[in-house]
Length: 170
Image 1 (cartoon, rainbow, N blue to C red):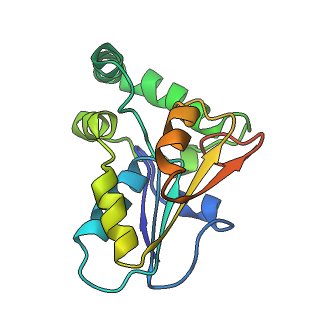
Image 2 (cartoon, helix red, strand yellow):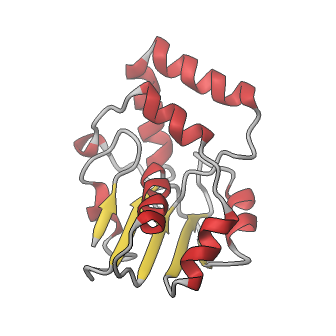
């Protein structure tokens, strides 16, 4: 499996073994990594059977002021931002994600927050025979789950996990 990490994370794919596949023809990504996984699958010319998007970072419904605020907060106090970010990713669990911490750059956060999920790209992948599965946690504190679910559900197999957060744990 080709796996793409979430923002400011590294090695967290172990958290998602129940949702992923070990197949070499599978591409998966968590949060920011879901964006990168989709772009990789779209650009890839070789065989891909399945694309797994785990709590895809979905901010295209947010106002520009929200994005500016996030970027300013990150730049002004990275330590506090990342501490709160990890707590929100883990919620509602109390799991400590610091072992996966790899503080990202402001350019990555900007790319994550301004990324636009394009229906045409998803449709192209489906036409190429790639199965797309998308997982959401009901108690996600990072994204607006309902907006993301409304976007993905018409085209992809979606899973809405009760009492789970962004990291798909409870």
